[in-house]
Image 1 (cartoon, rainbow, N blue to C red):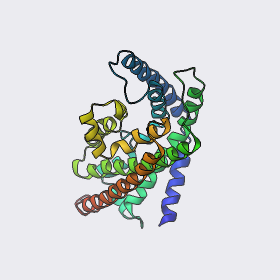
Image 2 (cartoon, rainbow, N blue to C red):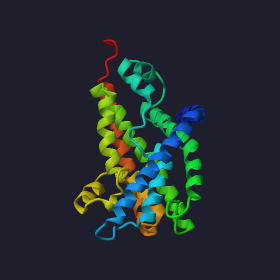
Image 3 (tube, one colour):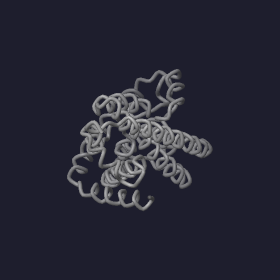
Image 4 (cartoon, helix red, strand yellow):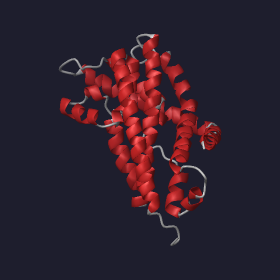
Length: 268
């Protein structure tokens, strides 16, 4: 069964890497929004009445990381093929496969995100590294922090796919991909720190954010990279990510099994 997942992953990754023109268009868009967010934060810091818990340089680096790894961390990224399978009834073909449907779709979504990120992240990171201060990318405090960043970013990627799986599973009930995507993406994007970094939110809002899994997918890895969080906090957070990941996968498999038991395909 693992070979089946690996084969699906390789095939989807290979197909995704062929969309270079779309990736180039996306890079231009991400640069535009990156500079727009940076100018907004510059205005905020220029008129801040007290010193925020993140420096402007950390926020700028945070912003560029968000733009570079956007495909890895957003919930609104979708696979229309999976939605079509659910809403059209062609899910019956998937159920005939001798493999676990949750694992199969998880592998597809993982490959989709990795292929998109590989095409976009390196050009963005290279360009912003050479931008003049304070608009450039600031490297992590040391090599260990960089390794911890990679570890928590990968863990965050696995979490975001587990969260995305809940969106697809919800469509079995709602039969509305647009509604499920809108609900998850709007709240998930804000709670993950993709609109405002979590340390810049009011204290009461931070308490809510820290109770939910979303900020572990983006805000936490980026703050490890910038040095806003230390090594001890990074290691502790990695353990918490592992717990959240196990819980989300268990919830997803349970929900999918329940949903598949209620599936009716052409009255069958």
